[in-house]
Amino acid sequence: MYRRLKDDLFVLFAFASALLAILPIFHILFSVFYNGIPVLAKYGVEFLSGTLPPPNKAGGGVFPAIYGSLTMIVLSLMLGIPLGVFAGVFIAEYPSSSISKAARTVLVIILEFPTILVGLFVMAVMVIPMGRFSAIAGAFALTIVMLPYVATYTEQAIRSVPQHYKEVGFALGLNRFRIVFSITLRIAKKVFITGLLIGMAKVSGETAPLIFTAGNVWRSTGALNEPAGAIPLWIYYLVQQPYSNYHEIAWGAAVVLLAIFLVIFLSARLMVRS
Amino acid sequence: MDKFKIFLFPFVSAVFGVLILMLAVFVLNSVSIFQREGLAIYTTNVWIASENPEEEYYGILAATYGTLYTSLIALIIVLPIAIGFSVFIVDFVPEKFKEAFIIPTDIMAGMPTILFGIWGVFYLVPAISGFADFMYKNFSFIPLFSYYNPTGFSYLAAGMLLSIMVLPFASSLIREAYRAVPEVYREAALSLGLTRFEVARILLGYIKPSILASTLLAFGRAVGETVAVSLVIGNAFNINPSLFAPGYTISSLLANQFGNAFVYEYMPSALFSAGLALFAIGLVVNVAGLIVLRRWTHV
Image 1 (cartoon, chains in turn brown, blue):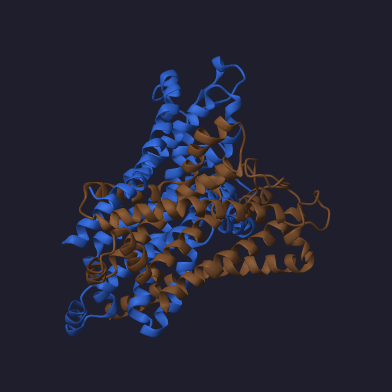
Image 2 (cartoon, one colour; image 1 turned 135 degrees about the vertical axis):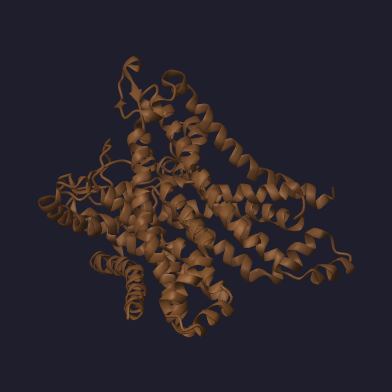
């Protein structure tokens, strides 16, 4: 008798957990679209091209944030991809070397490192010596955040390719550099590109490492050695303002950020699929 | 060493360089506060920022307390849900629909954390404020509900938001482990005429280590989360047992105070030592989680 009852309660528990797990996700996604899309519709193209308006004044946009995000992401990819890829190649090509074993552990530690600490670190080594916040410092912080993703996926990509492809390369008289970059990574390009996309998705949404490195501005000259805005940073600061038009702009920026993330996420997903 | 290895070596050393340099910066910058206050920086709850360095005094106990309290709230919420959700997907959802439940949690896992923050400020905090009001009026004799906070910015808001944010990590680990239990165990249990509940209880018994590992790793995530938490926790130097009290976590303290810390003589050092504590907590928890995970998967 009680066994039946317990079983029914258990099924109820499993279904309730599923509901509690899934519901917040949809509520968050829904509320970003629900609050953000009307803002985009109301502000029109100006939302992407304008700058922050004065409090309680209609119009304006988030151009400096988009510009800052784009420049910092591109810069961090330029730094982080070579660094992460070559480090990942080392770990994959010399897997039994003690350097590789230690590097793997270090990458896990950096991956789990709270990103706010990366921001503090870059402030200490770049911002204070330079005397000001800058897009370069922000990009440098993002590079550190991205590094473990790029390196780990590069390693996995190389290790997923069977040994005999490499042996063919050796038989042709190719050097190791050519074998890795013309054969191995080309065969495993799906895993490899997925890794790059995941690293990019990660840094495009990061806020904490930018607070003390990019410093945030509402109007930027565009120079790389000067403070920069970023979409997540703008949301962070606008939410804390008491003005309702700033909250509107924050929701609009949230939709833009979510759209960027979803595009990268879905491309990564399709990569894995096909 | 071949040429290729020599060419790659600088890049792999950069990985070590980053970690060593980071640790060095945090340790070196913490020295002056340790010399001045000793361990009192970790064991007291004071925050006296002054133009006059003689009067400055810092203790981050409130932030450490908040970090542990909010992460604990998150775990208490997330653990049963993650287990129930894993059982649901593996046992009750037909194979071709499983993905439909997993994709949303994958999106969740990678989503920019600031989006959780803005949702928390405009939806979660107001909801908690109503709930807090009700609980205070009826149950204020219980310490958990003893704080009157009409704003809703609180440990509970931070803990609930964290629980939503770490769920994907906790549930994916538990789900994969639960799925990997050999089918023969399930069949053997079912053949004895056990109910679904009894079967699941036995199978969950097998994956205890990965439940423990996922708990630890989720805790590690929760400890380091910054912006979403700092937007909803209320940012107050508080050590209060009530769920509804506002507080600080180490990471939100850093996000809030570091920007103007350099005006003061000792505050940067105090905050670097807070960062060191955050790093230590995160490292211990994550390493423990990884050890449990590795030991279990090697058996």
